[in-house]
Image (cartoon, rainbow, N blue to C red; front, side, top):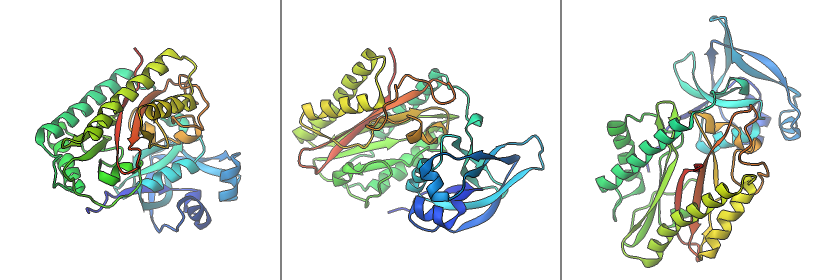
Length: 345
């Protein structure tokens, strides 16, 4: 199985504390000294009881752009996993937003800055264009015949990375290129799995997050490899459940994330499938907008989100959504995945 791509996280605050690392990541992470040029810090008061309990500090530093080019924020850069990033997102309060920066060392790294400095309101047309490019990438993967019995997930992932770079100019992916087959199709986002080989009459799904310019695409599609009627039925039902959930969203102006999640689960079960996801979607926008602490700002379609999906975000900006459907067979042995933008008519 290939080594995962290196992910760097720059911290200038409490994520450097051993007790916070143990509480957030479940382990200590060794860092290297670095700095963020062109930024400075101010202090923000923390009122979230969970963060207060983990850090033991009422005031935390937060970065803002500086008008003095000599300014720089000192800190540490860590090598982390995709799961670590989500854990850090959950720890940070909504005053912070995660963005990608260039450090003094030259490394590109994620860090948390003041949310008021987040990207501007995204034009929907740019998101739609990014999705169309993402769907074209999926079509090109199919045409290239990457998905076939006897091929390893890791080999397909490498082929996708090369194809995306060569034919679509994609050098950044806002999440790992995910290829899952067989029992691995039960895995949720960020969950590690051993490399598997596609078998005869198998099922495969792709979950891609290519970045086109400054805009994220988040697209997923499933494939029945062979002639299994049940796997072919699940692949067809993925789009059906998506369409039904989208129709309910369009018909219900006050729908919440919890409401839409319940609809996706009910529609899946009505067709004889389990719903396999912990969420059924999330916000998306300019790179890396969707990496903000969405769980604390109503940015996920899950049972905990009782906020109206059409409400603006905490900065008054409209939110745009990805709807994702993850179905699992009744015996819990395999599943499929489908996701696209949740567009208004």
